[in-house]
Structure formats: structure tokens, C-alpha cells
Image (cartoon, rainbow, N blue to C red; front, side, top):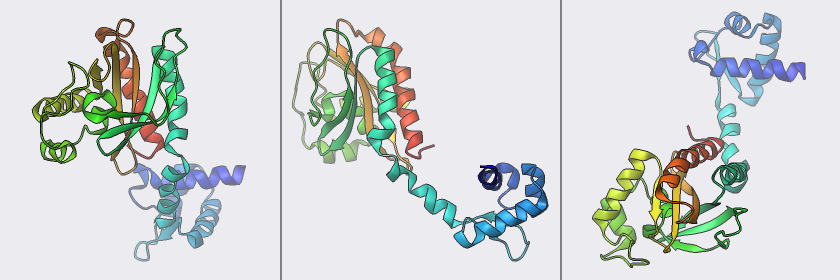
Length: 250
């Protein structure tokens, strides 16, 4: 365990701002508190695996592509649902409402996981359920980085289908809603998909900074009014950020 700890300390030092891209054995030893002989031995062990490389001009050491290759596999190892589950459970406990996880498929948000509220009256949503992007908080979160031209390509001619009297049906209206998402960090659905249901959602990004999913809290409008949704919104945003971080974002 001591050897592993020392190896990790050397790698972390080389990744730090203090190393300034590359460092000599003496600097690494000083920065990690390890003997020079130990540092030199670890660097020699790292080199064949391309975790570090030595600059032939300066003789100093820097991180190499082996570290990148290992790190780049993390998002694949930590699946979206695996990364999201603990945050969804925590968000459900905070909000006391149903928490949803969705991805985009065409013009729909597809529910891929959920954590049900323990309230007697709660939403009964099925995994695999499809909801129109333009009528949901999940949809707004998933499309939050789309401009007008891209949105027109997704939805086609206006007016878009009205699911309830509150559904946004125009490009201008939806673009304005997305601007609010970018400004506030979260999206809302004020009975736009289902009468008497309110929802607040936020985008999830991966290691390439692309929006790949969205998380939301939804509940009956009488129990989850607009002011309550606004109170819960920061927790939704934080949960999305935490999941994104696990997927390599940030």
C-alpha cells in the first residue's frame, strides 16, 4: 500500500500546477516529500507504461499518453445510469418527488431510469417512456445548447404539436425558453406536457462537454408549485453537475 501511495503522489504532483508541465527528480522529491531514490525508481517504473516520459533536452519528467489513455476509459467504465443513481436517490430524498433520467432520441426524451417518490400520490412513469422534447423540462435541458437553426432542423415547420394548452409551439418561444436554461442552469415544465404536472430539469454533460442526458424532478402541480420548483432547482443543477463530473466533465 505504501508503494502504491507513493506512486500516486508522484503522478499527482506531475499533474499539478506546481510541476509546471515537467519537473526534475529533485523538484518531485521536494514536492511529494519522498526520497530522491524512491522518486527515481518510480519514474523508471512508469516509463515503460508511458505514464511518464523524460524530456531529452531538459532531463525533466512529464506525464505521458499512457495516463491519458487510462483516464479516457473512465466515462465508458462509469456508465451513465451507474453514475446517476446515487445522485437521483439523494435528489428524491431532498425533493420528496419523482426523479427522472432521460436521453434524447430524435424529437423525444426517452426515460432510461427513475427513482420514485414515496408520496402516496406520485407519478407512475415507465422506463422507456417517450416525451416530446418541446413540451418537457427534460427536452429543454437536452437541447439547451441548440440555436434556432438547429432547432428548426429537429422540429420542422411550426406550429409544433400542442400537448396541453401550455405547450410551447413556436421556434421563437422555445428558443427563448432555452436561453433561460442557459442563463439559469435549469429548465422548467409548467404543465406543458401534462396538466397538473410540474417539472424542473438540468443537463448532464460528458467528458467532451456535450449534453448527453438530463435529470429532472417532477410532481403534481398542487404539491410542487412554481415556488417549490424554484427552491428545488439548485439541487437539480448540482446533481446534474455531480453526475457530469463522474462522466469526466469539468
